[in-house]
Amino acid sequence: MLVCSILTFFYVVQGCEKGVEVDELPEEPELPIVKVDESFFYVADIKEPWREALFSTDENIVYLFSREENGKMIIYNYESYSVVAEGVKSDKILDYPVAIGQFNDSKELYIGSGKYVNVYDGKTLEHKEKLRALEDGDSQYVSSLEFREPNLLFIGACNTSNSNKNKGTLTIDRSSGQRIARSQYGDNCVRIKTFKNGLVNDEIGVFGVGFQTSSPWLISDLFDKSGDVVSNSFKAVAVNKMSRDILATSEDADYFVTGERGNIFDKKTTDLLGSLNGDFRNYFLNDDGSKIFAIKDYSSIEVFEYPSLKSLGLIKLADESLTEYLVPTKGFVDGDKVILVYLSIEKIYMSKLDIPKF
Image 1 (cartoon, rainbow, N blue to C red):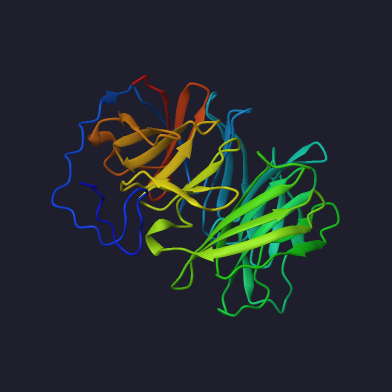
Image 2 (cartoon, rainbow, N blue to C red; image 1 turned 60 degrees about the horizontal axis):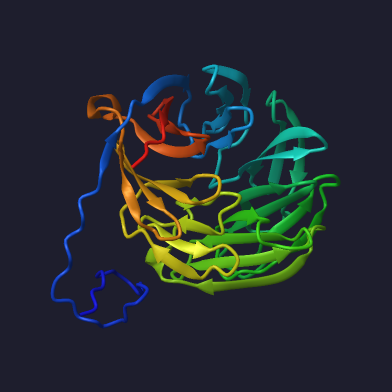
C-alpha cells in the first residue's frame, strides 16, 4: 500500500498521486535529542528590531537593524562581544532590502528605501550616497536586494498598483548608478537571491519568491556578467509550497528552502525537490548545503541532511525559563558552531553553541 502524507491545497509528494486514500499513517520514529551548552549574550537595545540580519563570518560580525524610521543599525562582533560600529538610517525598512557587498575593495552596506538604494560604509556605517533604482512613475518600491562583484546590484520590487507595468528583476551598475536591464515576472513583491555555483561564463542566476496575488510565483532569471538578461522564466505554484518571509540557501547549495513546511526547490529550475514536512519558523544551511537547520520554536532546532532529507535529530536549546520571551529568528553556521539571533520587543540577544554529532 502506498502511504502519502495528507496535505492541503495542491501539494504533491514524490511517489504519491492525488486522490490516493490512506487507511493509516506510519508512526513517526522518535528523534534523537541533544541538549547543548548554549552560551547567551546581550547585544544591544534596538527599538523594533528587524528579523533580518546580515552575517560576515570571515570577520565574525553581524549587521543588525531597527525597522523603524530613524532607527539604529549596528555592526556586532560575536567573538569579541562588542559593538564595532553604530549608525542611524533615515527610513523605515519595508520587506527585505538589505545587502552587503565588496565594491572597489571596500565593504558596503545597501539599504533599499522606496525607489532608492542608500549606500553605507560597511565598516563605519557612514552614509556614502543614494542611488535611484526606480523612476518616479513606477508604482513600486525596493523590496529585495543582492550585490554581486564587481559592480552589480540586483533588485526585486514590490508593485503596489497590482498592474503588470515594470515588473521584473532590476540590475543596476554600482559604479554609475545606471539601470542596466529588467526581467519580467507574473507576481508582486518578490524576494530575490542570487547564485553563481553551477553556472558558466561568469553568469549570475537569480531565483525569487513572489507573494502578493492569489497564485504566487517562483522566478528564475539568468544574467550575464554585465548585468544583461540572458533568460527569464516564472511559474505559479501552490500556496503552501512557498513563502517569501521564509527563504534560505547558501552559496554552494544547489537548492533553496521556503515556507513553513520546509519545501525545497532547485535553484536553477525552481523545480520542487522535496519537503521537510514540518512546521518551522526559519532555516539556515551549512556552507556546502549538506545540512539544513530548521528552527522549530524557541527551544529546538531540527537538523536534516541533504539530499536525503533525513532528520538527524533535534538540538535542544536553553531552558524555557530563559527563552520564554525570546525567539531565535535568524541563524547561521560558522565553522563548527551555530550562531543564533534572538529578538524581543526592544532588545537583541545572541547565542553560540557547538554543532552536535548525532
